[in-house]
Amino acid sequence: MATTIPERVMQETMDYHALNAMLNLYDKAGHIQFDKDQQAIDAFFAAHVRPHSVTFASQHERLETLVREGYYDDAVLARYDRAFVLRLFEHAHASGFRFQTFLGAWKFYTSYTLKTFDGKRYLEHFEDRVTMVALTLAQGDETLATQLTDEMLSGRFQPATPTFLNCGKQQRGELVSCFLLRIEDNMESIGRAVNSALQLSKRGGGVAFLLSNLREAGAPIKRIENQSSGVIPVMKMLEDAFSGPARFIWRAPGGRRGLSPCAPPGYSAFSGYQTGKC
Image (cartoon, rainbow, N blue to C red; front, side, top):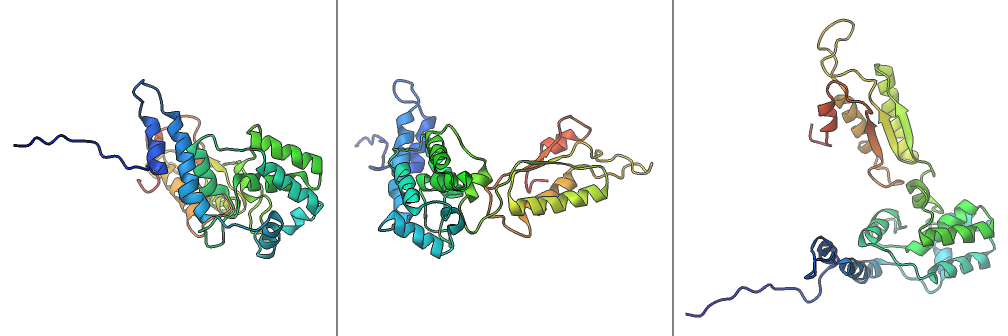
């Protein structure tokens, strides 16, 4: 009777997710396979980015089209001589920029780059986004715009998410982030916090709430025992405010936090809270 020997069947060409996952596996010499991450970047561009990118005959045509179709803010570009703008884009693309990790490339194209209004095709690469951010922040100063472009391409300077995400776009939120708001132990303060969550998320992102002033679950209210419901219901209200009536497209997801710098009664419920789990 013939003996069957099991063999590992490998695809001739691994997709970018599989290549990236090989970072978790050691090679025969016991080393992390960093080269697989670089291969994942190449595969990601070949299989996904390039086929889903809109191409233009020239940079001039690209800018004219994106302004006319309502993607780029002409007020940003109008501060500069158009010849300088074209040279700056050319300078950025000639820099030889390459993503250092697959995760960086994946995050940029899923969360930051300018896409068509239906969200299906890419209108920018990293060099284009960097150039538009530099042109916006420099406000007409050609020297500063060039310096900012070089700093971002080198990785020495990276603006905050709302700034990098929104600069130069005609349909955008504000260039603001990182708000810490304090919630006091009363309904008026809780109501203001929910409204603030809506308004700040609409315009920018990065909102955190200090919850340590709220009394724990079961604490008395006006001397009546077991009346307080604790911080979890407040966190649920804030969660609904962040994700409920509007999907905030002007910021990257995940920019909200509930903070408690100490460990009050009921802290275990606070620390174990997960979206949709309580």
